[in-house]
Image (cartoon, rainbow, N blue to C red; front, side):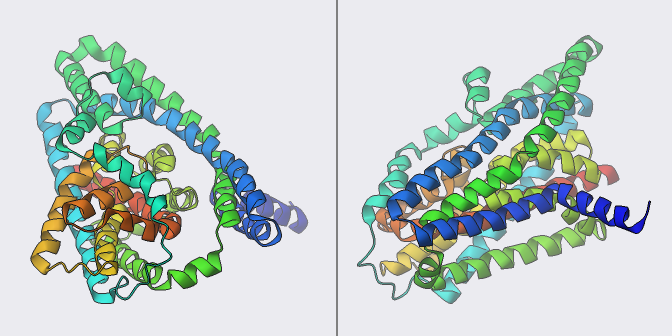
Length: 421
C-alpha cells in the first residue's frame, strides 16, 4: 500500500469512528441551530426545532425499543449463571451499598457548593414566567409512598415491558432467574433461548447506534434554534457556573474513586465509555446509551452476568449527576426566594431526597419533579422551578453524562470485587 492509499485509509477509519461522527454531528447541529436562530423569525425557528428534534426522537425510541427485551434476557441469564440466592444477595448487597454511598456523596457535593457559591442570593424574580413550571409541578401529584411501591413492584410484566419500567422488569427478572436456577437442568433450554435472544438484541444495538449521529445532530440543532445561548448564559452565568463547579467536583471524586479501585484499568474504561458519554451528553438521555454501555462494559472485561445485573439497578438507584443537581437546585430556589434553611433542615432535605428520588424512575424530567416535590415539603415556592427551566436542558447534558460515568464505574468496580472473591 502506497502513502496516498494509507492516508486515505486512515481518513476513512477516522470518519467511520462512531464517537468522531457524533462529535462532528454535535458541532454541525450547533452551527445550524445558531444560524436558524439568528437569521429567521422565532415562529420559523420553533417550527424548525420541532421538526429537526424528530431525528433525536426516532433515535431514542429505537433505543427504548431494545432496552426492555435486553434487560429481561441478559438479567435472567446472568442470574441463572450466578446459580443461587446467596450469590445474587452478595452482589446485590455490594451494588446497593455502592449506590447509596454514591448518591449520598453526590447530594452532599451539591449541598456544599450551593451554600458556598450561593447562586440564588440576590436574584431578580420579576421576569420569571411562572406558568412554564406547570408542566413539572403538575407531576408532583404522583410523588408519594404509593407511587414508590408501584414503580418497584410490577402488577403485570407485560405492562412493565410496554412502558419500559426498568426497575419492575428487574424485579420480575430476578424472580424468574432465581426460579430457573433452582430448577437446574430442566430450565436450561429456556435459559439458552434467552441467551441467544440477548446476543441477537446486542446485534440490533449495532444497527441502532449507526443512527446516533443523526439523533445527536437533531437534538443539538433543535435546542440552539430556539435558545439565545449568549443571552441565556449571561442571565444564568452564576447559576450555570456554580453548577459546573459542582458537577466537575463530582467528576473528580468519581474518577479518583475509579483509579483507587481499578488502578491503570481506569484509563481503558474511560476509552471504552467515551462514546456512550458523548451520546448521553448530546441527547440528554442516559437511557439512550444503555444498550451500548452494556456492550462496552462487557468488552472492558466485566462478566456479562455482572453487567446485566448491575446496570438495570444502577439506572434506577445510581443517577449521580441527577442527585447532585437535586440538592443544588432545591436550595438555589430557596435562596432566590429568601427562604432560610438551617443546616439541620438542609441535611433533612438531603435524606428525604436520598429516599424519595428512588420512587419516580421513569417519570419524564424526573429530577425536576423531585425538586418541585421537595420544595413543597419544605415550604419553598414550587413555582420556583420556572427559574431553572430555561437553562435546565444544558444542565441535563452534564447530568446525563455523569449518570453514565457513575453507572459504568459502579459496574466495573463490583465486577472487579467479584473476580477477587
